[in-house]
Length: 241
Image 1 (tube, rainbow, N blue to C red):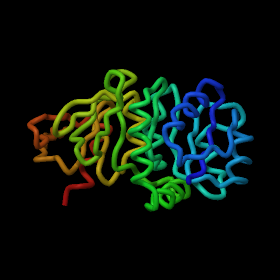
Image 2: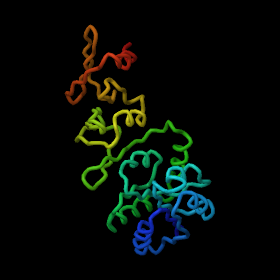
Image 3: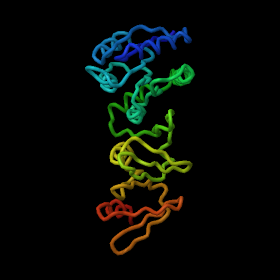
Image 4: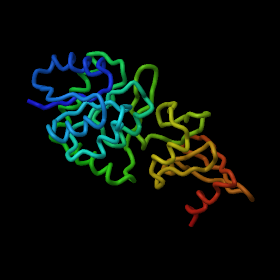
């Protein structure tokens, strides 16, 4: 048996999970909360194995709750907002359920929870909260009604698209809901460098750099050419030996 706690400020959100959990008799709901403050007390008291957690709530957000827990259970974020997906996986959430979701999607989530049971997921979650310089190996980007997992190591470069960002990867292009500056702050500077107000490149995919009198052009391994603006020239110069 596994102890489960549901946290959502909407009754409908908790009801949906409660109904879906009826298909998993080994899961026992030991408590529910509709705000962050009550959730914190409830989780610390019952120490559940699994936590279904909303993000935008009165009192404390879901991320605030996680930061203040004595022990961190396997956590699934359940929210109507896709914009927190990157942040959720930065803290190594097991899954990110985007409302409204189907029973089949919920079953997939339960499979992930079972595969994470006994792993070091809780430890890495705690470490990521203590160490804000932990960078994700994967991020999620929305495509239609789905969230697509994109490996950071597959991103060749990033281009600003207004308030969004276009991720050019080895297999496809993906549009992120985050602006390029937000992504820059969340990606490892040892891999990604900003070379223009609207461009960032993964140094692992740089093929060559063309040097001119007052500028540089970066040629990526996929053939793309990225111009380096004057204000970002030092980003390239520090790699020249």
